[in-house]
Length: 339
Image (cartoon, rainbow, N blue to C red; front, side, top):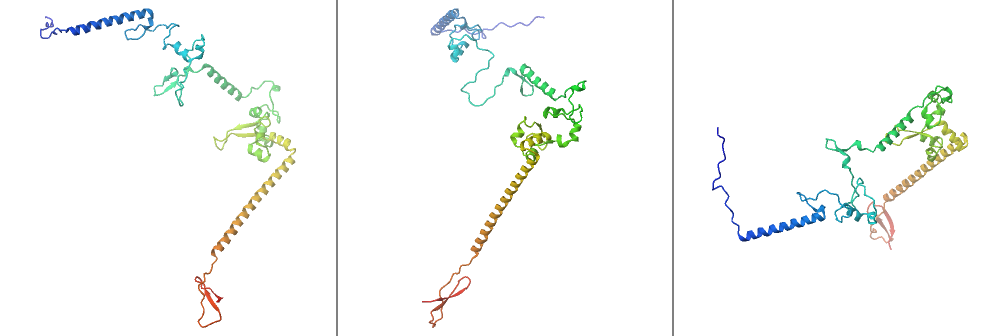
């Protein structure tokens, strides 16, 4: 079986020879000579400066830029024009990992993101790669967490009874370590409930009202140690400051001299408070009476009638020289003398 072959081209399908005019031939020759001259100039320049030679994509090749290069687009020239240290002839090299300086022309607030540390979460977000977290910072946070856990743990119990701290009421070794660390008080949970007059906790308001202590005294941790606890009434309010009762009483006795002096000062302040309250009430009552009195007088003044008398009326033929005037509104009459 014979294979099919391509038929030979016909005379009609062949391209006819193009006849060039003398002017077109002259222009082609001139362009050829110009191209050869440009090629020769490019070759000579490449021998003097190899970095100026272009590749097939019309780009310069990736070569090492010499130190004596004076091109305005090189890194050395750009850094030398903007840095005062390079102008002085400093030989220090610029750190390639240093972050770029912010352009002074840019205004407003902006956020810096290091895209080299961001990974695609496949959920439409770019998140920070946890593997690039500073190792020193991670170790520091871990050490802080360990220290916090160590402080919250109860101290060990020694086999030798003499080495263990004991409750000063009953001698038990099962003391409350929170009271020991915060207040420096050695007492067990059983004795706390058994002696509430000594080991109960007082709030800041109770200390101010019952023992007449001030805010600076209560805030001083050295004078009166206190325990901070979350406010049970509202989570966003300030923490409660709890004080140990016998420590507050000891400080109050030293401040006022004795419990009797404290009671006398409390009574004096209470009496002054009652006097101020009574005086304020009396002043308010006087002001109310004054306003009421002025209001009644003004109302009576407004209701007072003013007579509007008309002309004098007199009987004809009488010559006694008297007449009568009558009010136009209420009819009230008065006698007047007519001259």
